[in-house]
Length: 262
Image (cartoon, rainbow, N blue to C red; front, side, top):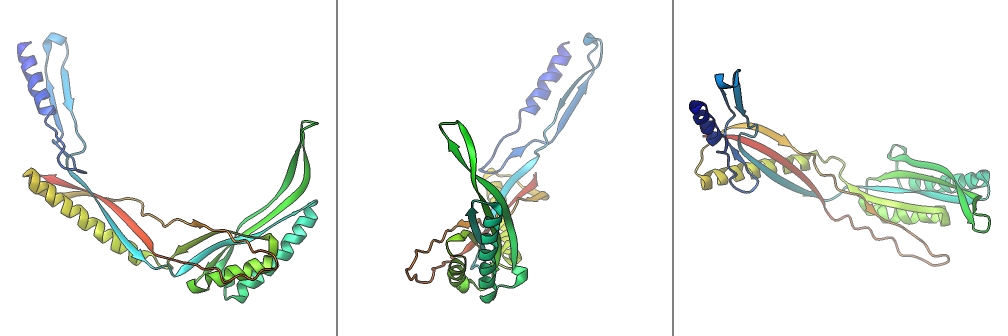
């Protein structure tokens, strides 16, 4: 029994040897397992210690910026009337004008895609009778138009607003690049370099020697978000062209790397 206790104590000392070194990095002992016989218990008695996160774990982040060359406009019409037929008729008339305005501004058919079409009742609550009643219907037709000339986006918004009149809805405006691959490649290279530099720094501070690279993983690349935008034109007033500022897009990649250590 005394021999068993000594063996157990030795294994426990080995098991608590892991430590954390440096920000964003973890150093752990290799997997250890021990198995001893214990007749006093009437059967073999096993002790197993396991640790999966072996080595030095580091993360790196890389970023790349680009000036947008594509504008994504989410726009369309919203019509209300007492009957579905009337609401739909007004919606079709206004939407046809909007589509003509888009095409007149150089937007190709393949760059216009229906995003949402909906017909829903408009209800009013009658307090005295404690019930709802349908007082009309709403028809919504929204498309996404891809504008490949950023400097024309403001003029296209104005043309659409004029064509659709009071039924016009500009829901969102987003900026992107036609081919984001080069920018993600640049961000990925920066992320890997950052992770490698961090690993070397931590190894130097901790007085450990880096071994071979065991594992590399890339997180989900960040996608620049859409921005909310709404246009309302006052009746009978002239309006200057809608100003559009594309700014810059930021593409971000994060990687995780694991090194063996000596």
